[in-house]
Length: 237
Image 1 (cartoon, rainbow, N blue to C red):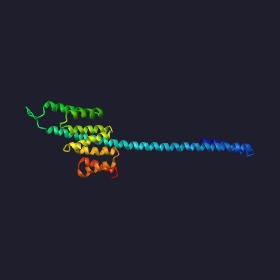
Image 2 (image 1 turned 90 degrees about the vertical axis):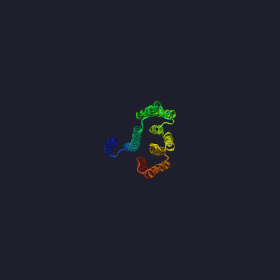
Image 3 (image 1 turned 180 degrees about the horizontal axis):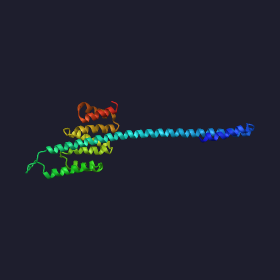
């Protein structure tokens, strides 16, 4: 607009002089040339602005996609925690009451109570979102109570602590320990799913696809198999 508004006075001056003066004509031509250059520069500024706007829009779209995937992972983690808590509560409710005078082979009630308190304290930190502190408590629990019935649960929560901090290379071996050492645990299938997701998060796509297919083919109908199938669909498989 600025260049166009300046062009009119130049044309009026050109008509006024009637091209009678060669010097004035050259001056007018020079001014017209300067105006064309300014228009070109303005056009370049507009084009650069449009390109930057497109880049910003693409970055915003990618950020939204990543946020949706993060929210989905978070919801899945919460669902698994709820399932774990429900299973633990059911197990606690089904345990028989200890005899008034336990035999020598029966763990002392005090030790069992201490076991529970240590585990529950770490879970409380996890539920509060304090993953570093929860991981520290769970690692201490695993060292202090190597024979505890809570061991597979503690390992699973420890893996989730690393996973939720996006330390997938640390989370993966924790879930693998559950798969190898506690195949009869309720945490077996959740651990297989989280291991597969860790592989995917580390861009190990072939290994992740294989792990997802093992769940889909070998444990059809389970919640973990359904999630694994969704992961494969998201990968276009």
